Image (cartoon, rainbow, N blue to C red):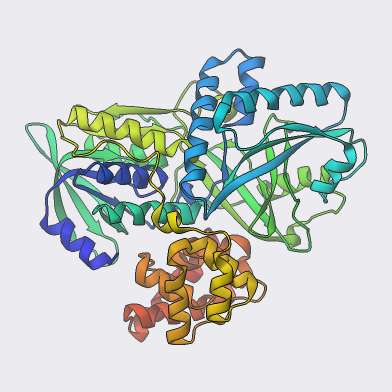
Amino acid sequence: MKRAEMLERLKNEEFDVLVIGGGATGAYTTLDFASRGVKVACVDKMDFAEGTSGKSTKLIHGGVRYLEKVFTKLDFAQFKVVKDALFERHFLIKNAEHISEPKATIIPTYSRFQTIYFGFGMLVYEKVSGKRSVGKSRILSKAKTLQECSFLSPEGLRAGVRYYDGQFIDTRMNIDIVRTASKYNATIANYVEVVGFDKENNKIVAAQLEDKLTGEIFTVRAKAFVNAGGVFIDKIRHLDYQQAEALMEPSSGIHLILDKSFEPPQSGFLIPKTDDGRVIFVLPWLGQTMVGTTDEMVDEVTDRPVVSEKDMEYLLSYYNRYSSKHATLNDVKSYWSGLRPLIASKSETTAELVRDHTIYTSPAGLITMAGGKWTAVRRMAYDLVNFTLEHANIIQRHDCVTESVKLYEGGKFDPAGYITLQNNYKLDEDVAKHLNSFYAGNAHLVCDIIKEMGLGNRLAEGYPYVEAEVVYAARYELALHGNDTIVRRIPLALQDLDAAKEVLPKVVKLMGEELGWTAKMAKSELEYASNILNTAL
């Protein structure tokens, strides 16, 4: 997947559909179009998953708190969201088994009523998923609860209710969707921004695109234009019609990663209600403990929202209420903020907004997807593709197959495959397990780079990432900046910011050698990526 080739296609070919946005929704929509034989292109003004799609809670879930509203507020719109998400949860895990898995989560209870209340709720949650359940819920004794959540304070604890959802690596999932779409001949490019539309008879017939790396502006013609820009959809809509009423009412959610001295729980841990009505998770993720999330409305949509010290202290205060080991800001190794693309309503709190998706069409023909979430992304893409085909009179050559399409080389994933890698390439066990999981059927390509270029050293002490992955990211995964590699292709910065900053010069050097950067370009790239790591991921 070479960017130069993708740009040549964009400049010289006409498409059935241009998808604007390469996050979860845009990428999966592109995959759906391409797998149906529709000629599709997809562009993103930043890197894939650089926005909301790479800053999630890393859960594939139906939405426990949404289900509670069905009973407490008789909000049956929420029931549809939960039911659809639980249906889609099955497909997302099944089709990306190398980077996703069922994950147990425990709700602690401190009275007999709480045990019965949450126990019944989780039983309903499981029953709604039906045959697509990923694990059976059950009530745990106090001792078993403490065993699975080692950090938990025993004071006042009565029992725990365990239920199952899925967990995944969102940045890797996004790039795997993109690469799968490219296998179906989709044209895809990051760092290409839509800056305007051309119209004939008041209908959009072309988009003006800017290559963010060179500043070049060129035109792409298509039969249909799909706006899948997440929290940025209103900015794109305003390029079509400046007075378009806002569809987005985004909220911010932050997450933080604790130092490895804080042993991650065996199962996830859910704080079901804070003083202001939010839900907080404490989750094991890539061998560390993740705490999140906040949920606050935002006034301005920015490319990289900043995490405030106040938000981190808010999360730590709740972690410390339940933990036997006190955590401070000094124990935070990394943090990030994501903006949720919630559909505007008259609600005064983001907790009341329905996390569903809706499709809009402008008079000029711009088709916009608003709302949704990671778990339901395949269904969102399915709905969006069907809508576009009908309204733009585009003929598909094949039926939808995304229920069964394995994401990139995930179809070749063998959980025991790391043993072969370990033996054939003389790798440490944790490195072999990591490569097998992250790259599945393509792990041998990373190992070949290790062998051919002698790049088997770890990037950072205590983490399984190796130098060869940097070259692989630049060669095969459209990594164009140092932060593309160190934040998203290899999520080291999401785990340990200081470690990422320390190895960044090495990452830039390896990328520069692969991509042919001059010394001046390499210096500029190092400054660019350093600035991002020092401000907001």
